[in-house]
Length: 422
Ligand code: DSN
Image (cartoon, rainbow, N blue to C red; front, side, top):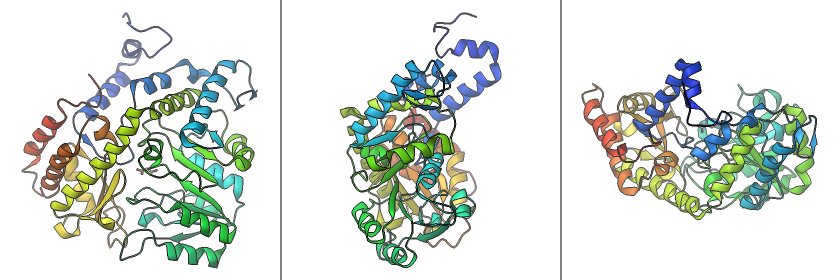
């Protein structure tokens, strides 16, 4: 079989020839993305340029260490990629220092704990059922097994972060580290408030910005970088880069955090992923990306308003970001039912616990929806109004009688705005 692409780059024909099963799966996943609405708040459609870097010969290189200080020969080329990425990250976020090597957000968080904490010491973070994250001290994670985790939540009336509770817990427990950020927080976070509490009790402030760092990169929401000792994030959410992690920090913490990423927590970096992160950071520095991030939020607000009109209650009364959390108790549907019914009509979203949820997490009373992916494919507020109506129909469709109709409308909506060209 001949190939139109050179032997050193992504070569789909070669893959088809060698492994037709995996080739078929790759096409099936592209078709799945094109065939419906992707509303998982933590997902996006990364660019062909990022995918090209991921599918490159940089995947071959061992490069333990950092640019100019490696434990292997032949790193002069990958050094250039990592240096470009570091400089782009520093410029984009106004940070003193950046590390692009964490394999994931969890790895980045692990490195921060490694740099600043010893087993048994105390961290203060948002509780997972209120919107936090697995790696912020839950009992099933290393972070909850190795450290004494204390959790703040949202206030019952506002459903926004309970800053008074956070401050009181910090004063009582004197944590070594305070963490803000999470995976289901629709509202802006008051980083100055966290900084002032961290200063008062002598704690390190870590912001896990995985969900919203892309909005920061585009200038659509305020940045945590001036306030935090260290900001960790994933690179594949709104930021629209490859799957992976990253951190930026103040100069005084650079050496400790670099040592914690390598050699404390990781071995060889994934240089193809590091290069792909550099590509994404370049894309994020453009006016087009800034406009994209503003549209992500506009779409999120429109989708949330539409879902409220469908009888779903927006936790905290709305959203300032790319995601919202909807309480479905008022329409008598569980999160698990909603996820399954929407999925049957090619609308992909996830069930999610809501604060003070009476249901277990496997059922949940809510759903989480986000607009990074649909905005990448060019949808606007008018499209979101249609999407909200389709979700409303799908999640109420207990007997499946609406599946064909709703699926047809989903297909009409995505027909001229595919995630990826076929
Ligand atoms: N699993 C990610 C999310 O969906 O938000 C967080 O790690």
